[in-house]
Image (cartoon, rainbow, N blue to C red; front, side, top):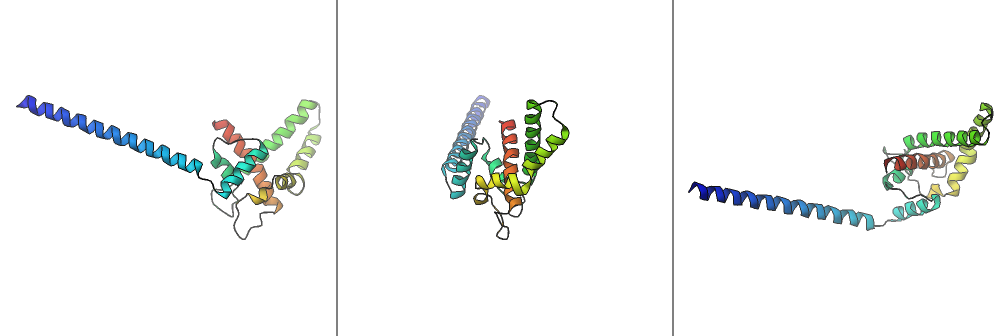
Length: 170
């Protein structure tokens, strides 16, 4: 009688394990299907992000980083401000490296002048951002002008920050 109860307990335990395993597999498959559906669902905004990736010749492993880079603070608390700060530092470092690689004896004054030219909101940064048509991609509130040089420049810088994080995390 005790042996029969032990076998019945073992069978119940085995059935329980099979049920748990099957439900886990089903939930994993459901998660995979949901992920595939998310990936294959296109919106005009997703299409704009894909176009931007092609323009900058970089495909994000974490598209959420590009989405954040294209989100102004007026639109969401999850925005591009921190990415823009990082991007500006990356641009400044890249300019410094370029000039130092060309001429190790270049004066700090020349490097600082070149950096100032490139990170200037009105001239270089906003112009490059407009060339990429970032003003058509960046998400802003209705009260914010997406063509404002500071908005476009912030998005342009944020792309550099987003790429840096994306390449570091992949």
